[in-house]
Length: 412
Figure 1 (tube, helix red, strand yellow):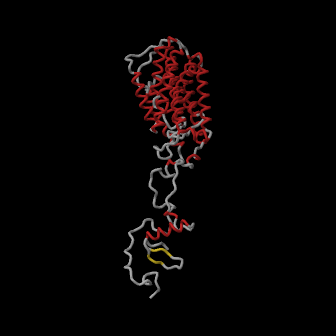
Figure 2 (spheres, helix red, strand yellow; figure 1 turned 135 degrees about the vertical axis):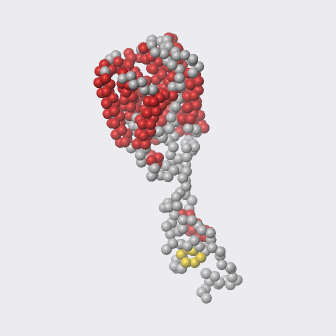
Figure 3 (cartoon, helix red, strand yellow; figure 1 turned 90 degrees about the vertical axis):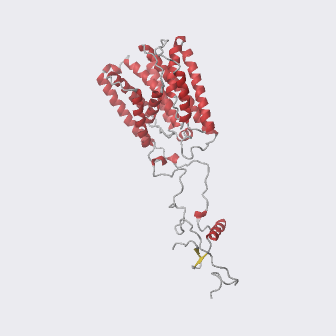
C-alpha cells in the first residue's frame, strides 16, 4: 500500500495523519540510530574522483579488428599502385615513397599523441609548413643550422601552450589553434614561394627514416595499451565536468603531448622541404591547415579516439601506409585531388571510427547519465512505497485544550 502524503504507517498498522516535515525529521532521527526508514531522503555523497566504470571499458579487440581492416585496405591500394606502375614499389621510386610516408607519419604521430592526451594540437600543420620554409631558407648553412632553431622555437611554443592549457584549464584545441594562427602569420610574411637552398637528400636514408617512424608508432601504441599508462596519459579525457581541475600531475601528459607533437611537426616539415629540393619544387607559403586535417584525420582513422585516451597499436602505421600509397597512386593517375579534400574525407571517416571505438562508453548513449543531468524520477534511490514528490500538506486540524483530544488520544 502506498503512503499518503500526510500519513505514515505505524507499527500497529493504523494510518494516522502527520506533517510531512515531521516525517522527514523522524526519518533523519532514525537514520542516526541506524534504522533509516527511507534512504531517498539522504543527500547523495559525491566526491571529486572520476567515475571508475568508464576506465574498464577500453577494449583492445575493437582496435585490433579495425587494424586488420586498415591492413587489408593498404594491401589493396598497394596492389592497385603496382598494377598501375610496377616500378613505383621498386628503388629509386620506393625511396621517395618511404620518405613521403615518414613525413606524413611524423605529423600523424604528433596528432595521435595530442589526441590521446585529450589536447589535440591543431597547430601541427602550420608548424610543419613554417619548418619547411625555415629549412628552405637556411639549408645552405647545413642541416643543424637549419633545423635546430626550428626545433627550439617549436618546443618553446608547445611549452607555452601547455602551460596555458594546464594553468587555465582551457581546451587544448582552442589554445593550439591560436598558436597555429600565430605561426601562419610568420609563414605569410613571405610573398613568394621559396626555393630550397640546400642539397641534403633524405632518400639516402629512406628505410631508416620510415623504419624509425614505424618503430615509434608501434612502441607508442603498445605503451598506450598498458592500462595505468593509458589512464594517466588520458586524464584530460572528458568524463566529468570539463572545467574541473585534475591536479598538478595532469599537467605532465599535456606538456609531453604538446611539446613532442610540435617537434614531430618540425621533423615532417624538414623532410617535405628536403624532398622538394630533389625535384626543384619551391615551398609555397600558405596556412598549412590541410596538413593539420590530414594528421588529425589519419590519427582518428587509425583508431585514436577524438575524446582522448583510447587508441590501437598498429593503426597509425597501417593508416599512414595506406594514405602514402594512395597519394602516389592518385598522382600517377593524375586525379588531382586537393589536399583539403583528402583531409576532409579522412576527418569524416575518422569520426566514424571514433564512434566505433567508443561503442559501449557513456558517449555512446544508453550508458551512464551525463555529468550535469538532473536525476530522473524513476531512479532506484526513491522508495517504491513513497510518492515521488511531496504535495502541499493538508491543513492540520484545530488544536484542542484537552490533552487526550486528537488522533493520539483515547478513543471516544
